[in-house]
Length: 234
Image (cartoon, rainbow, N blue to C red; front, side, top):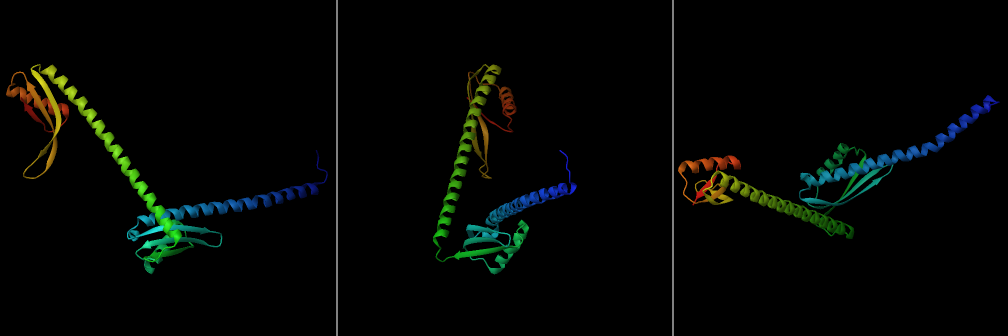
């Protein structure tokens, strides 16, 4: 096709550009506002999380918070129970908002103190208490499981080591009748310090010489990779 009238062609291109711009502009504005609001929400969440760990909130607690965002104003509401925050502390919190990119945000703190709490605040406190309790129980359960697994692994390793030691010693010293290996708690009665050392009990068909006992002690220290060991010969 061939454009007969160049003026109509230019007018058509301008019309398309204007319509496209009018169509895209609201989407860009909406996208910009969504990004700004998302950033605001993320920053306030981090701000609250850091406050809960700060020394200022050792004797009180943030039981609930709410955010309000629009292009004209931004607000962050907090409900705090416990020791009442001073005006100086409230002012300090307001200044801290700038560290989180929350300049221009109005911080509104409701301090319940020791008075009567509204139903919403009581429900938030109860929910928070339940969540913290569940978290602590989950952490304890995880610790117990890990300790049980470590204990099982230690027992299995101990059994394997005892079998290996017994087989190797019986091959080196056929005059050994039986052997037992365990960890013993040793206490220094002067310093009251305790230490755990391997205890090896050996039953002999015939009592070994002192040189043989010394050889076995050196071999066991090397084999078990320990600085000291206790041997009982029977």
